[in-house]
Length: 597
Image (cartoon, rainbow, N blue to C red; front, side):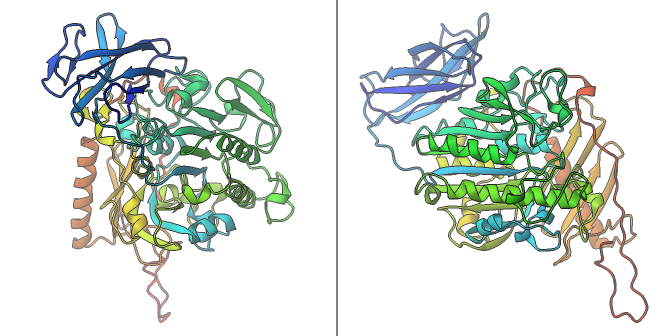
């Protein structure tokens, strides 16, 4: 439960917005000057950090778990005096749950412009760096509009996601690694009950607690963090702070079809669209085009500032040729090679991204920070040489987790720059918070209202100002199943610094170790399997292993999990890529040390 208030003065009417409630639940808003902690006798089991807390307003949550309370600050509060607000709601008989406390100085403060204006987050599905031409021609991608976005912004060359869809999406919207939220794998529809728990704080919610303005929020496209069977069902994005949602609960194939008798032709030309979480429609407009149409329609009706996530289904399977007008790959049909179809779908999405950016309301692009990234690497069957098909999506190798990541907008000081800084999808949460001015220090742990919320992401605003600014000293990624804190049957992790990378399989208790070579397209050979470890490597591995173990130990799950069956989680594969360099032929003049077969 989260509370938003604005800077106010005594006797001035204001609104307090409470989100994350149960639909129809009662909520009360209390206020007082700092002190105590003083426990109110009228609130069993709740201790508010204020002297003589007074009831300011009461209300009832709507169907989306939101309540707006109109409040007048007591005239007895002195101008300039700190005042604490906290909302509580009854979760069970005689049990009240408190919100985050909000401190506001009682003074008439006019709203200032938010630091970065609007935020547009664009997510690509199953598109690694091998498919984006801004990252080099080796993979055969043709993405001129994404390239142009990089030319006007910052391209991050060492950005990591999680190995598969849902864990990345959970990490992006919460700014937290999957180990904390319990969302370590994909939930399989239609029977999967688990979802990203509504007690987790998302970028949709922090946009509503900024002291500058109340941002409008929207999510367009693929959600993939709840199913029709989970508690939030089709309302998942609404419960997570997004005011508007048009899109899909997951992929657009027969497995994700909601209802009986899924059509044989389910895909990009025949799919189900959730219309603002209220009803399902069957669509025949190409899905990538429809998502752009929805984004333009929604943004066109929003007041500034806004935060909008456009999460394209492309270029996830099913592999289908896009409309010819959207790509330059030549005549294609469903029998065309998968890499060709994947790149045509990616180029079609690139074309639609260009249409989205070109048709934002007049002047808004200049006031918008655009964050574009991939949710994981390219799927194995779509990977072309010289990239290694054994290191694609699903795996914690670079081909599965190193993703395109581009940011443009008013905070970029050196357009067209490339940054080697280590960045993570978790950083999107912290960056949106910094842009909107959301007070993340006020956020509380879902299981302990007295403990601060642990956020793994770091704001990218400093590196947008100077691309050489370091962000993380190490990057971390993981995939485990089942989700929650149950014993895992699949648990793979990876951590890297500027030079080395460690992969660890916690089920097999097996390590792989890599050294990044300048100019190489991935992490190179497994030095352990290839017998190439030196004492320097052994020492570096020990340091990374200690860091990984400390991170895992320091990330206990802090959510209330739903009980779910192991059969409803997508389990991982047990793939180890042990490609070793091919020894150079005698007198060839090369050593072969960095060759990746």
